[in-house]
Length: 267
Image (cartoon, rainbow, N blue to C red; front, side, top):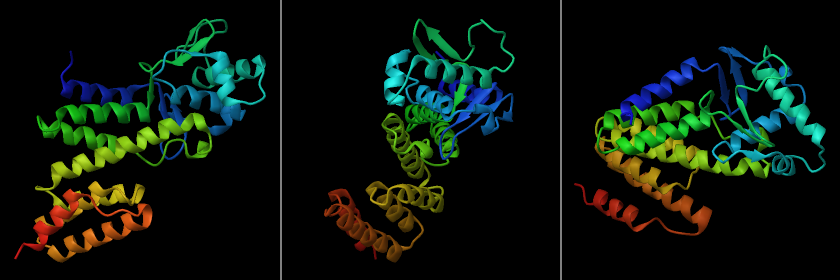
């Protein structure tokens, strides 16, 4: 089994060297041989939808064609699927000989899936970086910091924002958001002693995504105390209290209140 550091290096190399790279966070775009693919190459929107669907369900077993079409299109026929699949293959492999199997889309009878060993996808890499960070946390924080930072660098916004009303994209959107919030918080915890200002910034990024994420307020309170700014730490608690009341009609958790008491006792 590869060490966590080796896994980290392999992920970095895959991103640099993959022939096909796809970004889904904040925007949808793809690269082929390091060249950005012009959106006009995709042709019909159904071609892009099919590829995005395969990305959204990439970690499942191969997906049956009819199930895919039922999820994607209310009125569909077999031709729609064939045209969309042909469009994907034409864009990803413009020079592929006819009547040969696709390199990037694995076909098993009438079921299909993306070959994750050959296509680099930002949400897949983000998840793998965070897994490495979680495994390293508390054991080798140098690797953990690097892994979490790599994940954060990939996050440019919500998953497929142009598909915000599509049910098939919602699960991946929620999952990637929870993962990046966790990465921000854990990296902020690691850095709180050596770089409290960076911890404050990371926690603020969390609050920009979800202003009621209570862990982020505690991180900021602790970091302000590290900087000797007791008034700002108390002000942060008060803001947390107001937001939680406005959003959910609740008060801060006991651990947040306990932290406030500890701060107030500082002379």
